[in-house]
Image (cartoon, rainbow, N blue to C red; front, top):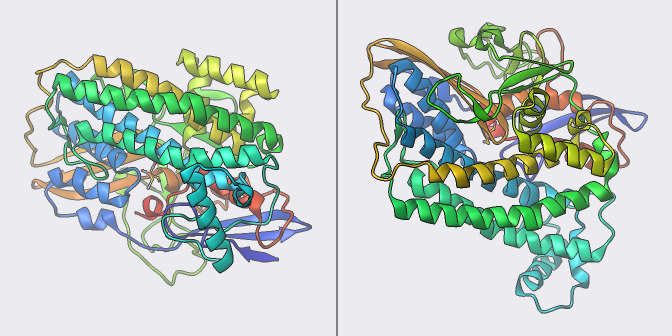
Amino acid sequence: MKVDLGPVTRIEGHLNVKTTIENDQIVDAQCMGEMFRGFEVILRGRDPLDAQQITQRICGVCPYAHAIASSYAQENAYGLQVPANGRIMHNLIQGANHLYDYLLHFYQLSALDFVDVTAILKYTGKDADLRKIKEWVQAELASQKAFPGAPFLPRLNGDYLMDDELNIGALKHYVEAMEVQKKANRAAAIFGGKFPHSTAIFPGGCTQAARMDLIASYQSFISETKEFIHSRYIPDIVAVAENFPEYWQIGASKGGFLSYGLLPLSAERNGSRVLAPGVLQGGKVKPVDFGLITQDVGHAKYSSPSGLKIAESSLTPDPGKKGAYTWTKAPRYDGRVMEVGPAARILVDYHLGGNKTVKSLVDTYAAMFGITADNLNSVLGRHLCRAVNAVVIADFLLEESERIDPGGKTMADIVVPATAEGYGVTEASRGALLHYIRIADYKIAAYECVVPTTWNASPRDDKGQPGAMESALVGTKVADLQDQIEAVRIIHSFDPCIACSVH
Ligand code: NFE
């Protein structure tokens, strides 16, 4: 039996996932990115300095990551020496965006896979937020329609938290989390100019001034966000993990893990980062080599050649292509499937023994839940790893903001060369992000983005290997063959963004 789960809701964009079920088990899955966008085509022939602005329009959730990857690629192409303030501001903007995104993902996009919203119908207290939610849920259930701005439906058939107090408490946190996300976004906008789509992130640094009052406001917003991470987010993840321990075993992807490393600590391109880069395969971490990345399109709707390296990439849409089921390409590392994202960042860093907080948090939670680091390759693992990322990033941002030199230079002087090429990599919240630019006659001759959800939601490659998310779905037992809440929980744990994946 084949079932279309799409449109998968509570994600960004139009994802369909088709599962094939035999004996109540998923035996095959296809991730389908159902639109073409063509940013790489739009960029050709334009002024290179437009790239960090245009590529931000790929997405409204992770625009800063695109701006920063593009800026890094251009810094590489122009040979810029970025002043320390510029690099630090990039970090402050991007780190704040990660914090916003983790809270958004947990509370708005996946908590309702575990929390029973109908518990609110029993609420008789006076809390204004909870009374409002009760009204919305009542109205949505009566009309069987999710309201824009209050999407508590669909409520899939499944096993939810049974404890009313936990369910209602989580809904209160759902509302509080939105206020905290606003604070993280305001922090990012202090140096980024605005959210989304920063006007201040530039190759060579940041156009904002290094002012003491800005640093103080930034620190105040991040401190409030950090407080919420410790007092609400971590305990809520622990509560989900205690109540759904089977999800340490559900949703493991069947390839390796790739991370480019997050938040550079120095101006050197290959200098250390707060979370270390690497490729984890069979328990061993190797350095990343961009030359080993290729993109297959055997099952994607393009007639351009398959298996091309990044600098050779090309894009010819072919909507009617036989055997193709998605607009998402299939990136592979040395021909292998890679999962990218929060679990990849934590697993790579943990295996390298880089960040002490990562090591101690992973060991603490492993002991608490009776698991090993390998179990982080799971639905709960991805949720927990986002929280570990959040703890590490929030601490780092408070320290990093102290390193700004008030009144100091924030931007390099830019001279765009007639011909050049450059690579820029960073970690968007959803994972490894690469931008490549080639310049000829002062114009963009070629531009390529290899994006986190392109890795995770990739289709089969030309060897027939399913992508990370497809592989994570296969083997899962489902109780309700139509709703497949187990599959939806797996998909949500990757936090796919289809707008980004097809870009
Ligand atoms: Ni549209 Fe993004 C992140 C990037 S995902 S959200 O995070 O790049 O593919």
